[in-house]
Image (cartoon, rainbow, N blue to C red):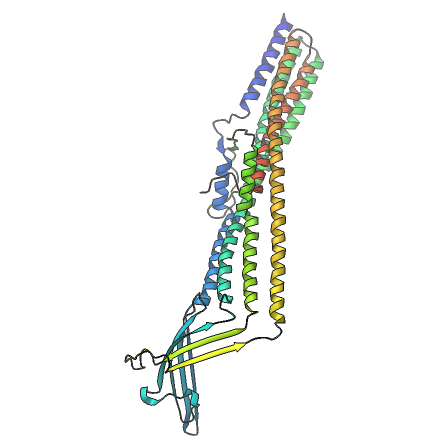
Length: 482
């Protein structure tokens, strides 16, 4: 009768502990504070040094555009030259002008000349009618080289493309940072709940050992049963210690991503716990197609290469421009529409003007043709890089997708396996009640159950990590933009 009571007590203890272990591992205590992956991401994006460095890239791009726009700033030019020798003023020359570069080939300018002296060069001569002064206004325009594009316009367009490249680089760096953070988070998730599971198994083994020891001291069971229970307790304490070390190390690793507003590193608070709020959803072929299409359009690496192709195309157009002859035309009206004293004057195009034509053309064009050829080679190389990158990215997406599908199936199978182990333990308990089993067999089945539950937590974490890799491969992340 006493053996029957002992058996029933052990059966109740094992069954109750199993149910409690199965149901309570993922139920956080009231003292724990959940930290979701989305909240973890937001902390990283707000305070992490890499995220702050990435934000500086926007400032770099703005300064590049500002630098290129500086070529179109109005330019004030003043030249003054005087010669005085042997009590004689040979000449006194002054020329002040303002040039107004535009994004078109035309460059307007307006200026004032004042020239006088005993030995003035005739071409510099200005009559004394207006105190040796002359106002001029006109334009210069390239009719050959520089008509379609020039260095200033090309530099500005490339700076604007650089800004887009900077944005793509920002997304690339941030996505990589968040991928590493996600991997660390799910490692932390596994180690945290695996430690909770290991702690529960120790508690169960300890309860069984204490009951077994008490029963042995009461003479109901043999001494070997206490030895076996003690061995099982030792094994599970070792497993718990290993799980504790893994949890501590993963907590240290997760802390490397956390900083405060003063750029001080932050340790993960002991009460923080990872949680998985997403349901296991098997991705469809439609999802894969959408990710591939999105990668072709918006993947940061492909965007950068596409923008680099556009930049090289601008270089090619500029290099081709130098194959044309240089033919610059300038026309300046003199003392029109005002005299230097401010009096109105009528426009005339066949008098009171300066006209200039500047022509040059290298005969062999070796330098220019080589520059065009070099640019075309760079352009072709980059286009090959673009094709290879697109192929690699699509392959990476397909491989990651297959891994996600595989892990999804494994999670379902592992979950079913853990449930079946529960049934086996229950069946073994029934056999024990009928006298057809013993504590050793119960412990073996329990050990298999706990291993199955631990592996279930592991494959759940691996599934989430692989899902993060899938979206990273497509150039996106599982977090809405803020």
